[in-house]
Length: 277
Ligand code: ATR
Image (cartoon, rainbow, N blue to C red; front, side, top):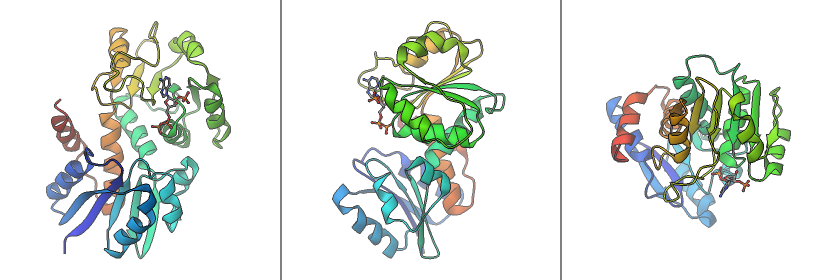
């Protein structure tokens, strides 16, 4: 019988996950279907019970359910617990187990473009919301030792740092301080929505003088190249947009569900094609 997978969220109509996962199932000859389900916040509990009763093998969870899903699960992976959000659920032996693949997926995507190990890199994170939290805790969990966080509201960066139990050394910075210190970092990661379509002229950080050979990574993929990435490229940086993060989080979820590694490059091509790249 065909196995059922899916994603729950609201809105969900534009999700690229069904396209990406269904192609991977076909390519690996797994008899399965991945469906996008629109789920209202007030109906999350019923939706999860329903999916479980229908025998779903696994599902993704997206906005606005990544935190509230946790109360409906039987077990939560320690890193997802630390991050405080779940984006992937595995239904195994009658139990629903929650994982967070956003953060580790992001770390893997960054590792895929960095020629050297990330552990000794000095990293600057821009933002202090949910996406930043997943990335910060996952980088710290992966052994990165120095990660500063700059945010419009500095207190939120301070709170993120205070809540991280890893041995990472971190400073909370204002955006102005981050502009002044930008040349100190090997990697700069942007995690807010500043510069996203339609506000494509906005940028979270004025680029002045980047460190030679540095990487600037933006989790936005609409547009493909944000103003931040354009400026960073003009200053000689290696740049990466958010498609890699999206693909790697999906690939890791696929691996958790099926035990098999999908073809990352193929997933990326499919997503890029759909987005018109
Ligand atoms: P997500 O879960 O997608 O990360 P979020 O939790 O709402 O979203 O966090 C949004 C992040 O974008 C925050 O870091 C926010 O800064 P504040 O903490 O100061 O609110 C940042 N952000 C959103 N709009 C911004 C803007 N116009 N300028 C600067 N930062 C902005």
